[in-house]
Length: 467
Image 1: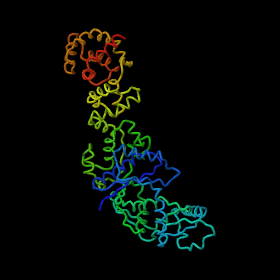
Image 2 (image 1 turned 90 degrees about the vertical axis):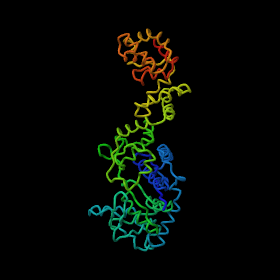
Image 3 (image 1 turned 30 degrees about the horizontal axis):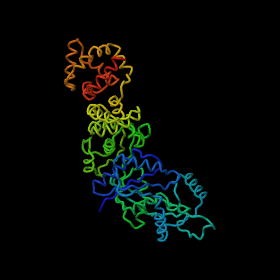
């Protein structure tokens, strides 16, 4: 059997963290088993489904690197198949017309509530002849659910879960206007897409029993179910925006790398021993949905940020330059020309050691791309005013005479100067740093000097001395 999984979001908003993890687990299980990972957009709620949301889902999955197989299935376009399935059940006596009016149903629920009974349809049209309906009355089509016994789902995560059939009422399959309901559409699509494994949040577990019965009534073998626990905030409360319940595009814009997000989401409710850093290849090799835990996972932005720092350090310098260049341009309007790109690439090995996000990395790298004269921030100006500028003016001839412009030789030169003047190395290095970067913070200053080159370094120093 070829495993076929699916991710089936409703396009009523962004691709949130919980949805992204569900998509990841479906993707990994399909790849682990050599199967297929399909995408279905459940856009039957026409009032709330938007093209912007659909586009955001596509973009979010692509950024995450979760590439689906084949073309996405748009659920609304398959309404004819959904209606045909309902008509089939009706013809086989497994469904029936219900002519109960909204007013009747409201009264029914109020009476049940007053008696402390569960609120569910009481089956009043289950065995009645449709001929008894008032002239012109519109009917819905309801599923004739089993009333005796129980339904058990052998869930791959939750274990065996059983519900008494008497707790499940006769759900609506087709509304009075002929439009299919979500429950019917999902079942028909899963059957016709050949879905073998349904991996989704455990908030869908209650739906599974109805869907299981409906699949069986349509004459098909139910798929394997795996209901994964939800994601909570670090405080254990339901995940909300204050915890970081944002769309994945927000994390992209905050400077997170997709591989960091994949690794982090993978570790929410699933693990492989004590391994924290897990490559994509290892994830595919090791992942099995049966190893997902039942306890709710906790989203921790601090841990995600730390993990992101690791992946930034591991990323190729050229790739990081491609990622930070537009961030620098967006914030400063600086165009990253070939020379600036070359400097950024050469400096990236030092820059990326300290960055936890691409935003931090872009900020720390900007000085390499700036045009002269550089703007000097307030803290840096204080260094210049406190003897830094005078030192640079005095040392400028020695700078110009310096032959070898490597970080090693420049540092050796600076140590000689500091010893001769009775200064600490930092007192020599800091004014140079200010002149070269416009800030009191940068990568190792002699490394910066080598990357900028002698001509640019001297020009920046002269700008400060002459200001």
